[in-house]
Image 1 (cartoon, rainbow, N blue to C red):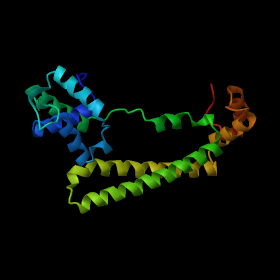
Image 2 (image 1 turned 180 degrees about the vertical axis):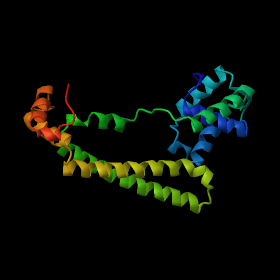
Image 3 (image 1 turned 45 degrees about the vertical axis):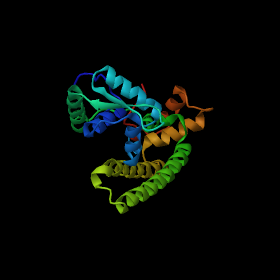
Image 4 (image 1 turned 135 degrees about the horizontal axis):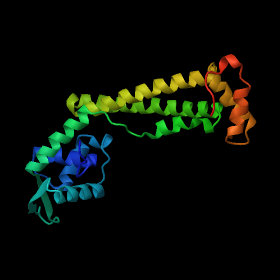
Length: 224
């Protein structure tokens, strides 16, 4: 898998639209919004123009014509090129088939959450769980509206995927809260104790002191 000339997901959406028919940028934007694609692809008009220019520069799309509708400004209509069609199919195939490591902000926060006390983390995760509940409920409403309007499942599958991720995250957050509250793991007890010793974020010495207080039978790991 070589590095792509254009890697913005919005560029992929533009190629997919132009594979249907030639369009000008305003039509691209309105079509994406009509299909609720802004839920899964970051979309604004300025970035759309930048993406279009980049695709033209790399000969993946080309100007087909310039049109004027009444007294409105001229609009440039773009069409996909043969290399653009090849790129579209190849790019889509890669995205669907090959898992990639995505550096999520929540994942980063989890990896560093020991800088806060367990009690604070529990409170923050409870807030996150409530927000996830609200997002899941709101998206259920969106899906219901789409279904009522007769929108095919194929057009909303990415929303279904997002719901699955949110539900999985909610379950993970719920399980993590329970794990921290019960504090059955020795490392969680050491974590709480380190914060009791610390004036703010625990130092290496605070962690070492907290670990040394654990019964020898509880320690199956060591801080180097």
